[in-house]
Amino acid sequence: MAAAWPASAAAAETAVPDPAALALFESARELVEKGDWAAGCAKFEASLMVYAAPSTMLNLAKCYEHEGKLAKAWSAYKRSLVLNQETPGAERKSALETIAKEGITQIEPKLPRVKLTVVNPPPGLYITRNGQEVPAAMLGSVIPVDPGPQTIAVQAPGFRAIRTSFTATEGKTEQLSIKLEPERSDGASQGGGRIPVWAWVAAGGGVALGVAAAGFRIDQARVEGKQEALCEGDLENGCPPLSQYNPAEDNARKKRDFALFVGLGAGGVLALGAAVTGFVLGQKSPSRGASAGPVVVPWIGPNIAGAAIGSRFQ
Image (cartoon, rainbow, N blue to C red):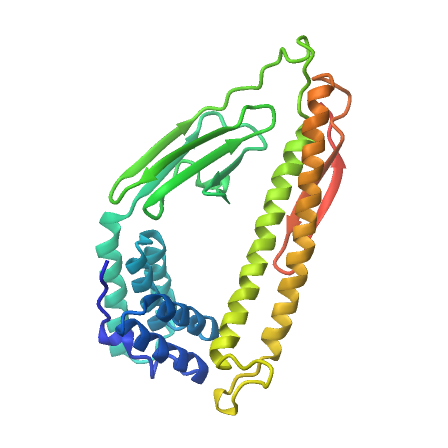
């Protein structure tokens, strides 16, 4: 998908006052104009990390359009309208707003969407789309998605897990209605057991911790990419004086990201190990008992993560 670069979105001198962000922006624009979208769009992302300018966000929206990621492009256009509220100069502000609204108008008819409903959703419902958790509050809402394969997984304690796939196509809304079926209750009479609830909770917690760990590792990689770009690949000797870039804050951020990646990753492995143990023991134990054992519930905040341990009776 080709994307034109309006002059108002391409020009950054007044909209990107940070020198490092401006240098990255101009380098990105040159690369894209030469046809090197991958490198150019990566520099636009780095520029946005240094300074969040609406013009940079608009160019990222064009990048997503070029990659066929319509939902991400639509979201970027929406975000640019928010950033544009602080743009100085009424004429430039109006021009950027027009570009964003035109982008939204062009994309919206082509956006693939999905509407997911769960009939009588039970407590403990856990839903993912392409491996990413879907908040229960999004059930029943029409959600834009990128074109391509989509996999929905739904599970809840005491119910059989359901996994379904479909291909999101442009301009089409996929409506999925899922009804969870209770697990068979005759397992004990046949000599089988029942997987305890805490094993499912531990499994979900392990996945959540793993996803969080991956997120911090990705953030670390982004910071490293930003420093490579700003320091021209010479991190050992420091950044060139003209870059006006102090890497101290980003170095601290990288160390924090790495520590959280290791800690959360280890917690995820332990939680998944506990879940596997629960699955194995559940198949060997009676389906009903006095206690389901310990429950490991992960919690993640903006600056810290951990886990709470309790018990649950069945």
